[in-house]
Length: 178
Image (cartoon, rainbow, N blue to C red):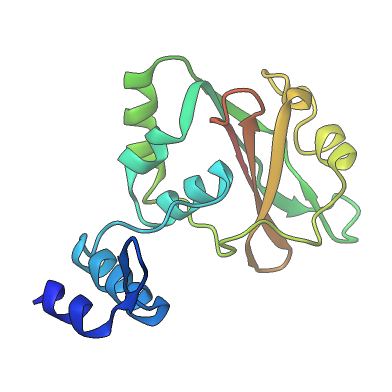
């Protein structure tokens, strides 16, 4: 049937028969839709792919863009001692050293952590501020990572997630949430 349609809509050339561009686009679209409903287009950046997988509780997809050692750092917000606002509490770090441990860790983490923003924030704090505040004294060298800040939602304060990607391997090795 496709061959008949091509013959009917073709453009003649001395050396070949070519379908018109509109037909080619329609054919490729139909072919792509037959490929399967669960094959999303790849995300441009590993941090975005990781966040999308985290929100979907898709541990396999998180593992596909992650590497070990993997640092998970969390900080809670608390009322400032002087009552003038909120401050971050001490950081709690978890370092995962093997692939098996990472899979188990992400299985426990995924149902508990959600990120509202699907793409990195354009209004994030400067890199130096992140390194000197949220990632200060981290047990991994965050200065060597590509950092993306995602918004997690707003309560009394803005909650964020920072995803760190190794520059050479393009793998996620850090997740910070507050």
